Image (cartoon, rainbow, N blue to C red; front, side, top):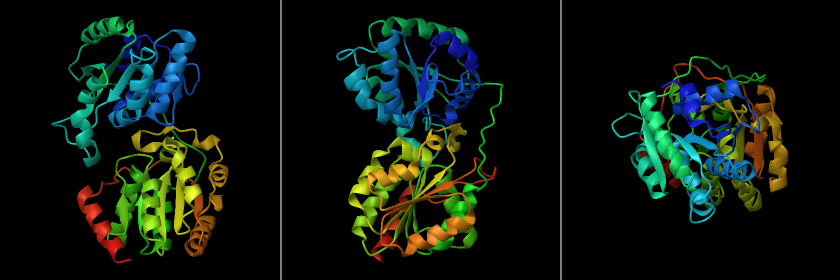
Length: 373
């Protein structure tokens, strides 16, 4: 289905969401049509954030907004859907567009398997009526579904289009880039060179994939790394849990700007606890690159200032490998919670692989290694 037709059928003039590779056609259409425009299109920090923003739009205009997201974001919308949008509370109508990762019978990554199994059930449990769009779904079928949805929306209830893999298309291209010169995979190689045998907790997406392949290229064990392949935004909290229970061991968290934004409250928790053995490295390319490159707001905010305001004793930003190496070495010797923000370009090599070990194997090997420290 052409994404332009889906947008026409829905008939809304306000979209907010968190980008998803399954919805890349929609995301690129919105960027080409609106860019980032607070009146028409906002890329938010997390899916609950989107839902609340959509509610505010409805309160101010009386119109129906659209929230788009990967199905992993359903967990983030449960609270606002149940306690804000629901017709037993404020009866705020919203159209959700949900990318269906991990659909049963379709090969996907391990973090999507269970989420895919419960995607439709979770929507139904939240009293959100779903309609599934696949490659064979016709425009007429979607028009009929939307006609049904409009009746539901007038009752203050919510609805969702669930998008199967490859079901939306958009012919125009969007190029996402910034002016930074440091490549993320090279940044990770520099981190690995300094950390040695220190444990690393790495964030969702390409950063973990590049860390895995760096270990392969170096002939190193994967036991040093916990790859947070799902649960976006929680790597630093996992690292905190490890650090406070291994106080004599330096612990590193390799994070991303989109992940930090998604659950920025974790920085306040880190700053309040001040684990002296934790180094928080945030690779900031100002983009949700793993799912297509759509922008985050991280390029426009002062992450170092945020870290210091949260209580990090030390925080710095670097944009050269010389400065990165210097700060990594200093952080390894420093007995204080430290943040290193690294300005990064957008892009990865086309042949980047995925971890060849299972998530369970990763956990077991990492835990066994931690026992030796």
